[in-house]
Length: 446
Image (cartoon, rainbow, N blue to C red):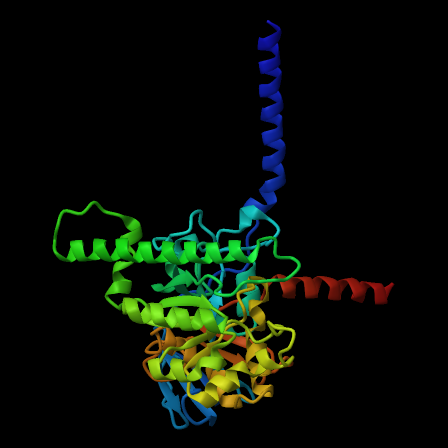
């Protein structure tokens, strides 16, 4: 009898605890951005009188750009505006292609300290079948904040494990992940194990344990490749093979339809990753690439692009120059290595992407190249330059109207179009600005 009463009490306690937890989590579960996605373009739009920066060509002063059904149809000075078109005077303003961030977890994470809002890491170490796009949350508050600074498109990628999964290129506007997705899968992501041992005070493992971990990771990777390749060969031979979603996802990689982004910063990691990709006959992109400037001959000879994992970071070694991360893009440019600049993967700070490029320009990278590093070059590296990255007839009307150079902090983005859809530039930041502006206005009145 007493045992039964105890069980009943425990059930009631469990029930009320669940209610409390659900109520606490409810704001996180129901909170979403207030901005309404743009409406599909219904008539031609002409942006008239602005300074047009196509990125891959000469700047056009007091030019006109026309787009219809989401595509750019005309660029020039003597442009005939279609009948019934919406004409927008942008005299004194600047017109640029939308900025592209090549390394984010946008839509996969919201609040770093809240585990329930972090969906960028899957359990297990070998997950080539993980698809980033299906986990994207279109209601993320970070999306409007990011696009308000001119970033119209991002590569969102899974994290964790040895083989994290495939990334996707998404636009920062849309009702659903399907509507937002530009291209997926975009690339397979592999985290290369550290090739050196760490002797810092905070490292809990001995050097021998670190070496064993490295060998274990490399063996895991080799075994995964052997199993995946055997599966691919069997599928090509039309044999009876039990479907394995992990190895199905690897088929486009073996057929060189999908590149592999290997995240590697140390020189030994980069060299090992290049040798591995050559052995496996993969299309390779180096992600991170902190030491890429040390192996530029190798990267140029193999035509391997580098996805620079942020410019605003500290030197990795105590004896290195303080400005080495700032000068990395210029070093790669001078060596003829293809690259693009990302913001380092911190989703809450993706809005700062143009300032990473600006810092690179301040430390030796030509200004025109800095702009290309966040527009045309990521589009080229990920194979979407036929649609975006520059202003050209036939490309998507994904563009921004600004008060000046988008790499300057003082510049404001005044209008933004994604595939011809006008985008709401308000965000939680602008709402808070207006809120506290009103607060101090009232204080002055009192």
